Structure formats: C-alpha cells, structure tokens
Image 1 (cartoon, chains in turn green, red):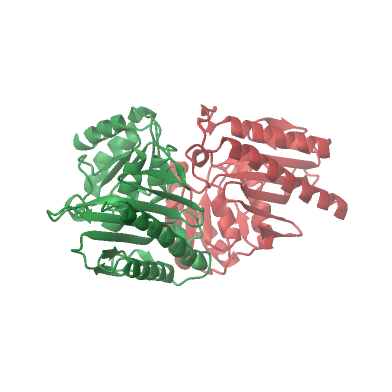
Image 2 (cartoon, helix red, strand yellow):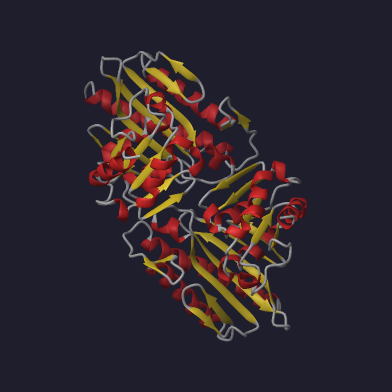
Length: 271
Length: 271
C-alpha cells in the first residue's frame, strides 16, 4: 500500500464500515421487512440498500477519489486506482428467514496499471454472530482481532467441504462439481454463503467449491483467505480477477491447504 | 403437571440442564475433537457424550424416580411416569465444522397410562448463539425469556419452508416431499437441524417438513412449538408419539399457522 498511514486509515475505515453496516442490518433482522426481487430474481430488502448507502457515504467522505462498486447501488469512479467493493448483505435468504449466518463483505482492491486490479484488504463481518474476519496483503487475517489460520489437510479424502446449495451450479458444471463432492471426505450444502469461506480461513473446514459468484461476492473473501494463508482461485487455479464473474462464470475454489488445492484443481479440470 | 411446585422445579432444572450442557459443548466447539461414527454412521464426539452424562446426573439427583432416554447413553427406567428425553448435540455436522447452529434438545414427557406419553415441557438451546426456547403445556413458549409466537401464513404459496438436506428423505418419500417444496413460496435446505423448528415457533419462517427423526430429535420440539401456538404432527396430521420414530419413520411436519398445516397434510397425503 501507499505508506503505513494510508494503510492504517484504510483498516480503520474497514472496521467503521463493518460496525455501521452491521447496526443497520440488525435494525431490520427478524422484523417483517418487505422483500423485493431484483432483475436476477435474488431477494433484496431495505437493509441491503441502506447498509450500502451508509458505507458509500463514509468512503466518499474519507477518500473522495476512490472508486465504489456495490451490489445494490452500482459503480462510481470504477477507473480509480483504489476500488472499494461492497456486498451489504451476503446471504439475503438467511437474513430474511432469521438465520444469523448472513454477512457483510467489504473489500479494497488496487489497480495494477494494466486494466487489472488485485485485492489488498477484505472484511467478512457477521453482525448477528458478532464475528469478524479482516485480512489481506501484508495484513495477516484476524478473527475478532486474533490471528487465525487454516488447518492442514493434504488430501480431498480427508477434507470437510461446504457449499451453499447444489442448485446454484449450472448443468454444465455438475460433472466437475460432483467429482469433488464424491472425492471429499464429507460435503455439505450448508446454506452458509460467505460464512464457509471464513470457516476455511479459520481451519474449521478445508474446502469450498462454488459457482456463479459476482465480483462483490468474492472481492472480500480473496484477501481474507490469502491473508490467513489459504489458497483461493477460479476452477482453473488462476487468480480471481475483476472480470472473473464473466470470464469464468464466477467459479470459486477455496482450500485451507495448498496440497488440497492442487488435487481439487486437477479433479475439476479432468472433467 | 402434578402441582405448581413440581412444575417450577422442572422448569428450573430445564434451564440448569441447558446451561451445563451448553458449557460442555462450547468447551469442545472449534477445537480438534475426535469424530467417531456411530452404528448408523452419524458422527459423535466427546462433547455429545459428556454433555448427556452431565444432564443425566443432574436429573437423577433431582428426580431419582424419573426415566431417562438419551441419544448417546440409552434408556434408564423407561417405564417411569415422567420421562426426560435428551439430545445433547443436535446438528453434530454443524458442531464439528464450526457452524454455531447446533442445539441441545431437552424434553419432559408424562405417561398417560395407556402405554403412551405426551410432551409436557421442552427446551431448544443453542449455546453458541446464546439463544434458548422453552415452552410446553400451560407454559407459553419463550425465546430468551420473552414470549414468542409464530406468524400468520394461511397458504403454502406464501410460506417460507426449511429442511436440513434433501438426501435425508427415503426414496419412497420423495414425491410427497417434492409436492410440498413445489407448492411452497420458497424452500431451502439450510443445514439447520433443530434450529428451523425454533424459527417456526418465533415466526421467522412458516413450514418445516422432515423425515427420519428419532424420538430424541422431536421430543423437545413438540412442546416448544405447541407452547408457541404452532402446529406439529406427523405427515398424516397425527400427534408425534413415543413410537413415531418407528411407526411413521420419524416424519415431522411443523407449521406456524393451522391453516397451512391443513393444506400441507393434504398435499402430503395425496401422494
């Protein structure tokens, strides 16, 4: 990053964004909020919209020249060097059904000059659980302020795998996905959304395979996982990029152990 | 119950059992506990065994003539008038993967004299979430000490439905189960185990359909749901009994609204 002061200011802002968005989400959690359907039929509520609006305002006030990409309110200065990428409520189905597993995803990416960008900092915040992961480049990942790490798991046969739901995969992906669930020691559709990436970062599980993720879904999980020492990529083993949501259909593979990552990339690529 | 003093003593014991079993579960949560497979291949850990042992000892000390039926340590005085039915950790898969949705189920049933028994009190305790539901006959259900109620939902088309996982149903049940998921406004495999019954009791969702539940899985949810004003039965609409685990394959239907219950029983019975 551009100096320690800037880095500290970004981390401090990240925590303030998590606090404020969490307050707003909890104001609406387990109340009878109106659920609207978006263009892609995914549900959205006033909690999503208000939490993102509040975060955008705070970022604009702190860094008026930074770019903003949010799930609910679109793009502002998307060509800026520094990009904040926001998903105010990941796991809206959990949110509207009273399940505390929903989370807020906050990411800071930096453009590298060739039209691409790389993740710098990320936050996975679960306000109803009071659980927060923060990490990134040169910022070892913490869980509620304490350094957290994945566990060793060298082989798929020993791996505990989570995904949100089997029906979120495209028919053309079924064979590759099924090869991994079959090889995994255990595989569970946990309705867990972003939570299971944090579970990999903290070594509670070993493996997540998902598809159809948007930029705002994966922008924060990459730095949190990498800062913890886990490996995250697309299904080809390549880094997730700004445009991975379109180029590789938002396919995400997260492994706590690099040896497991190599095995699962091979499994996915052999189909 | 047999007098107010006895009733108060049972409720006080219920809370102490929840406190103590929760302490034991949390001592082992997110540590590398050894996972053993039971005869039915379901996972079990020292947390299950120790939490149940502690509860059994507390019940024996308070009510030496009461019966005990527990998931891990079997039956003691099963012909007694008063039966405590225990599941120390429901949702062991969540527990061993660091997901805080696991719960402890504690029930008190009373024999009615004809070999049958009816639920009197129940507790659904989620120690990692610090969320507890307690209720039963003449004891309106509370959520963390506050009266809680289901919400109105007259029709399946408007209902939010949860179940743990589709692969927990027998092949012969698939048609009936699919008829309900198709009729429901939304249906989700949430990996939620006993949590989704509490969600019905508190009006966050409307409908749960499950199968293969054992006595220790449903003994506590019946009084909690009935004490809240929800309706719970087998798939035929009949009350869940001591032997429902064998007579109707542990099929459970829980609805927040009696009108929804009537519709879903008809759906299940028409297949």
